Structure formats: structure tokens, C-alpha cells
Length: 166
Image (tube, rainbow, N blue to C red):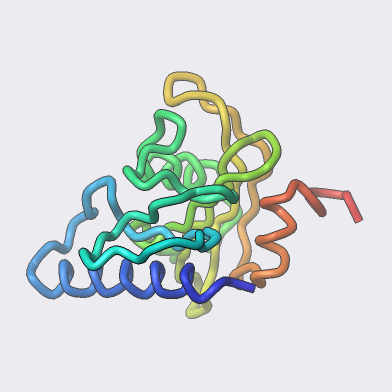
């Protein structure tokens, strides 16, 4: 389950995308695109200045700048789309700006979930990616006609239940 802070961060990020989209920014957002994250709250005084970046990242999470080990979020999304495209129906449409990227506790380092619509259903490209932008390493890649449940996403972050691991 997500903490209240993670929900707040995700809701804030969604609001930024919706406002940006409504103001005519229909193309991909900058590298600070909304990517829901898991983060723990830290005790201490709260800031009175609202920020879009979490101050601590002790658990698997995106880096605040949108830099994922040298990858941009759009690069990770495109690698995942390229790896899974042939497994989707021909009418698939990906929503790259809503890609969710989580840092994993195991290698490959990044869990990439790219939402899509296929044959009128909510779909999702799911990948684990590591390496570097010049030599990306694809671990798992899967095309699903339904999004993963949160429990399975948490398992993948921990490196559990990948492939035939039951």
C-alpha cells in the first residue's frame, strides 16, 4: 500500500500534468514528468514552501530530477514500448507521459510501466531495464491487457515473482 505522502506526491504530479495539458502542452512534458513514487516520510519540521520534489528517497523511487541512472523517463518508456509492441493488438496507443518508473532493489534497476489502450481495454507495457542509455539491458518485458495490481508491482520492485518464480 502507498503511504499518504506518496499519494499526495502522485496527486500533485497528476495536477501538474492536467494543468500543463490544459494550457496547451500536449506534447511530452519535460524530464520532470509525473511518475508516481514510493517514499517514506521523515520526521522533522515541515517546509512551508511547496515543492514537487521529495526531500528524502530512502526506498525504491524515482530520482527527483527525472534522471534514472542516466536515462530520461521518455527513454525508458520508449525502450519498454519497443520491447513489447509486437505483443499488443495493432490498435494499441501508449500514454508515455503517464509512465510509472520505480527504482528496484535488484538488477535491472528500473521497473517501467507504460499505460496504454488496446482493443478498448486498459493495457500496460511492463519492463525491467538497467544498464546505460548507450547500452540498455532489458530484463523482463511483458504486454498486458490490464494494469498490474499494486501488490505485484511491489513484488517486482523487490525482485520477487519475475517470470517463472512462483
